[in-house]
Image (cartoon, rainbow, N blue to C red; front, side):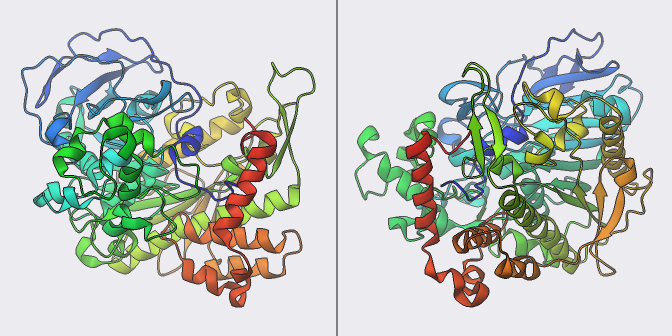
Length: 602
C-alpha cells in the first residue's frame, strides 16, 4: 500500500499546481519592449489584474541539450534577439492534467530554461521589491506557466518572477561517468539547483529594466520549491543573489552521490538509482548489462525514454534528487549545512507548514476512504472516511512531524549558524464548503498546497474550486493576511507588522510561530512538541493497530528530511522490529490494487 508519503510528481502536483491549466489571452502593452541580455521581450497585459504588465518565456540560459545535458547552465548573451512567446516551455516530465501538462506519457523538452516576469504598470518610474517564485512538484514535475501572481503584484506593489528548472533525472543525476569526467560546476549533480541559481543571476543583471530592485530579492516556494529555498540557503554558490527567503511546506532531504548511483542496489530503500535505471534500459537501448557507459553514451539516450523509466516502478522508494555533491550542496548535507556559519547567508528567513499537510494524500487513499456511486458512474464517487479516529490520528501525527522536520529543524539549524531574523508559521485555514460527494473540511482541511492560492490570489482547484475556496469573508481575510505578510516581509518589514498579531521571531527566546487563519483565529503560539514526545504518545494509543503505529512512525521519520532509520528501529524499545515495514507496505498496497485496481479513490 502506498501509505508512505512520497515526494513524487503525481501526488504533489495535485496540490502544488492544482487541477487545470489554461493559457490566458493577453493584449500587447504599448511601449513595453525591454532589451535584456538574452533578447528583446514584449510586454502583455494581464488577464487577472489591471495595471499589471507581464513578459513571458524569457530564456535565462542556453538550452541544456546535446553536450550541455548534465552540465551547469551556460549564460546566454543575445541582446538583439527578439524573444518569441513559446506557449509551452515545460521541462521533460510525466504528463498530468493535475500539473497543467497535457498529453500522454512523458512530455516536455530539454529546452525549457525560461522565466516570466510580472510588474506594476508604472514599472518604468518606480523600483519595487522582487519576489522570485520556485514552483513545487517534487523536483520531478511542474512548470512556471501555471502560476500567475498578477493579483499579488497589483495588490502589494512587487515584481514577481517565476522560473523553470530541469526536473527529475535531467535535473539531479549521479553517475561516475558524469561526475568523474567533468570539472568545476559541471562536476555537480544538482543541475536543477544550478538552473535556479543561473535564473537568479539573470534577475540580478536584468530586473531593474522591469522596475525590480536587484538588491532586494525574496526567494519563495512551496513543497519542492520550499525545499529548493533551503537548498539555496545552504549552497555556497548562491551568495548575494537573494536577500530574503520564504519556504512553504519545504523539506531538507539530501542524498549522497553513492545513493544517487546506488550500484548493485546496495541501498535497499532506493530502487531507482541511476545504476538501476540504466540496467532496466538495457533491452530498449542496447546498453550492456553491468556495463559502465560513457558520458557521451548517456547523453545520447532519449530524454523522454530515460525519464519514463523512473515512472515504471510502483515501489514506495523515493527518487534520489538533491545530492551532497560537494559543489552545489556541501558534503555535510543540506540540513547540516544550514547550521554551519561558513554557509550562512545573513538574510531574514520565514518558514512554515500547513496544519493538515498529508490529508491531501490520505484523503485520496483507499486505505482510509470508501467510495460509492449513488446514481451513475458518470458522476464522481461519494467519498467517505472509513475510520475517522484513525484518519485524524494519522493526519495529525504526520502533519505535525512535517512541521517539526520541515520547519523547526531547519530554523533551529539556521539559528545555530547565527541567523538573526527567523519567523515560523502554520497555515490553519480550513474553511471549505462540504459537498454531497465529499466533506472537504473534514477530509482535506488545511492540506498540502492549499496555501498557494492565497499568495497568488488565483483560486483554482479544478471542478471543486468553489468548495475548496468558497467566496466570502473568510477567504478574503485569509488573502489579505497572506499577501500582507509575504509582501511586507519582502519589503524589509516584519511579516506581522500590519497584522493583528504579535509575530515574534523564532529562536533562543522560544520556538514561536503564528497560526495563519481568518482574523479571529490569527494568533501567536510556541512549539512545545519534539519528535520524541510526538511519537511516544503512539505507544499507548488505542485507535491504531500495532502495524499502523509502526507505519505512522516510519512515515514520520523517513519523509521531509533525511531518513532516520536508527530512531525507527529504537522506537519503543524496538517494538517495530516485529515487522518488515517495507514488505508490509508492499503487501497492503498489492491487496488494494487487487481489489480496486488502484490505491487511489480517483
